[in-house]
Image (tube, rainbow, N blue to C red; front, top):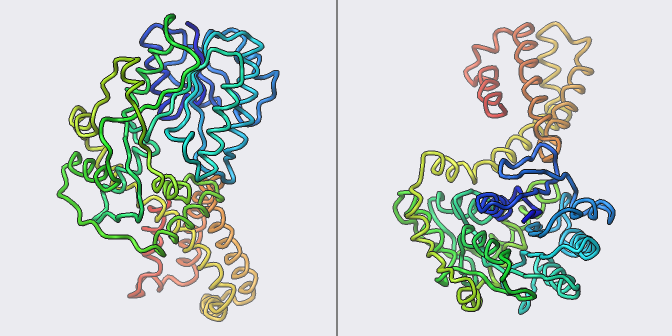
Length: 418
């Protein structure tokens, strides 16, 4: 079959795409950016799922036999809209499939959305499911639990990062999870594309165990070869602080792993009745321990796990560093700066230089905070740091001998930004 896979660069989409290609399907990947070209795809269609017009969708599905919709947005932010993707975009896709007489649509949803919808993620997922059910298409809706795999993506990345921490926090009222391997989800998609596969059914997909978050993290920690962590109860205020910080980062363009949606969905849990799925497909889902044991951890796994939590801290500290540096220069540090300019014989240009440097520092700090401009702002920070080093050396070479090392500290900052 010629199969179109949406969300082809995500954890599930990329696994499905590779598996379909391996089974001999002619694969078409739908991606948001032209640079994202999966190797497993024979053809690539560049389309913004949330904003594509009906005629664009008609062109995308015009010559395909099946569509596997793996697109998902976990939480609303400056970059993402659950309504635009799960409802509006999905409806336009399904409408185009009806007009183009696509023979089969497999739609990835989430476990339990027919029972509880505490967040915009699950509410919009359920409405997207209902939109597909209302069509005349031969559809299959798959509702997996938390999906993990060899790739560090989403839950797989978060569990690795939590496993690297010296302690793990127990969330109050957290539900149980039937974590499922992405390979089992991909195998299900292949099964549902067979000519004799059932149609117009909904299947819940999950692993063989109901695990707590702490048990999942402990499994990853054992896999990475580290001794067990102590488990501490996280105070409610700390949970709220972390999720609010994650939500704020989301509005700056970052996809923070710990946000209010994650907290609410962990409280809901992700367990269901997987017996119909197992009976229909014959798949025996692997336990988390068995799946991890089958893929021994490599050096990059341990590096990733330990650096995962450090990445947001690094960006946050650098942003605050530049903001504070600029604001201090423009405020309480103004006279100190003027003193340096007098000592260097450049008092005449002092106010202009200090004001320009302070504003540049503030702009750099703001730029690093936003995901879209972070890379450019980091380059700007490197250039500014080098410029300050050169100007400081020319004006006050004695600062290199300062025991507090103001000139020496420029270099580790440059390396951190690089």
